[in-house]
Image (tube, rainbow, N blue to C red; front, top):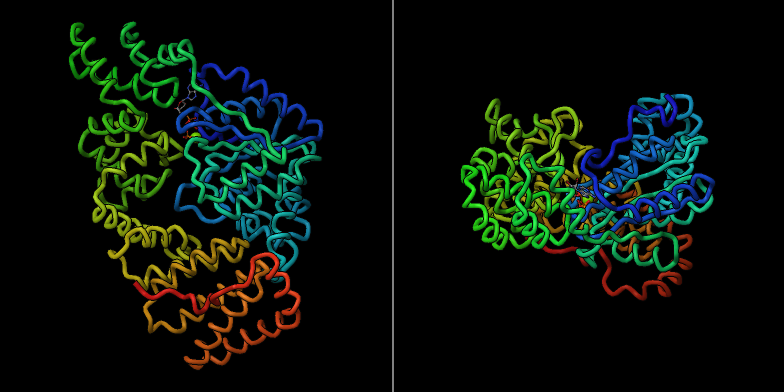
Length: 547
Ligand SMILES: Nc1ncnc2c1ncn2[C@@H]1O[C@H](COP(=O)(O)OP(=O)(O)OP(=O)(O)O)[C@@H](O)[C@H]1O
Ligand SMILES: [Mg+2]
């Protein structure tokens, strides 16, 4: 199968009936795609408030592009439990799945070792992908970024390629860096990256926040802001949804309360319909509940909360378990989790699906219709129960993944960390350390540093060898970031601990690394002083005490 013959693109959301408005935005995007098809690719961002319809618009665009012969790939950023470069992995896996073995071999070239770190399926599909060997940390990122771009360009052949990246507000540091790198390469390509993000809730601590303003300022990306739907569009949307038409009073109530936010419109219309059936459809009751209820549910979050309270007890319980697992979840995992099973579980899933809280996302797989739903479910959970749930999810994941649990260390480690004091700190730090190793393999150095900080906080004091390993990995990450004196300090810390436990082999390995960077240490220190200023505490000393 060649690109484009792929079964179908994987749109972020279901598309099709009931889409309203957005004509100007679609026109703007179409123009950008036409330019790209002739060899001037680029980045487009679709941005707006949560629920304004960015993902849906991106899906509509993806379907249209695919119909016109574009190759479409997509990836999504997770709010908290994603592994570094998660969306890039999704894009590459989809590319591997829809390309022929022959074209994969050609596309990989000598980049096999770096690419296979991101997409293990590459090795399975294109056996004997050429090239072995270790890429030194300080050159890994550069090689990886170039490899990803060259790979996609080669796979796409003559077809233009659309890459949809959803929920970029949550992108991890490495994904953001890759995006910035791509921005410099796309100009002469037939590739468009279409990214969505929540503009009104950009968190200044997230790496995407600074990157996006920089890309826009330097005209490396174009932003399409989504405004509210007009009253007429809201009316059309409601008409397409409602089984029985709403009264004019109800419609005006929805138009006023929702301020043209389609997610809000959707939940309001469902709310009104549910209220009606709860009241037995009696005519006189309508006017009063519409006003009163829409007043009570002033915000989309508030309304979702009120609708959740109306669900049956098993459905609510099921949603809590699912929300702890994440935005997407498998039924088998939910079942293994033990909250509900069999018929009761199926009924609960059906009920949540009917209420648009969940949507199908493949065979026996579900997804929260919107992240605000998931956030709302979690918001009302008392902390001790939340922690107990996270612990149960971690236990289940460990059991379900079995031998491949190491590959999922960041996911399991995330749940253990969220379990707080309910989890054994040694177990949590073990997974986090493994996650740091995995992140190091794909050059996600900032993520490595974050994971190692947490690992060192959690590791019991007597775990000297584990501390040595953590410091050795920290050194590697600093080396990858060309922060040589930080790397030295971390490695020296590791060395001391290896010597303390009498591991002369590991100590010799660290010695060799220190010798390697010692050769150009003078240059490195000079660079560091200009870029980052002198470093006050060495990272090894900055190790934090145990909780
Ligand atoms: N133009 C539209 N016409 C009809 N329905 C729409 C439209 N835009 C969005 N919707 C519906 O509204 C809901 C919210 O849309 P969507 O998930 O795309 O929002 P979003 O802005 O991507 O939100 P987030 O990024 O917060 O997930 C979805 O159910 C979607 O199908
Ligand atoms: Mg979205």
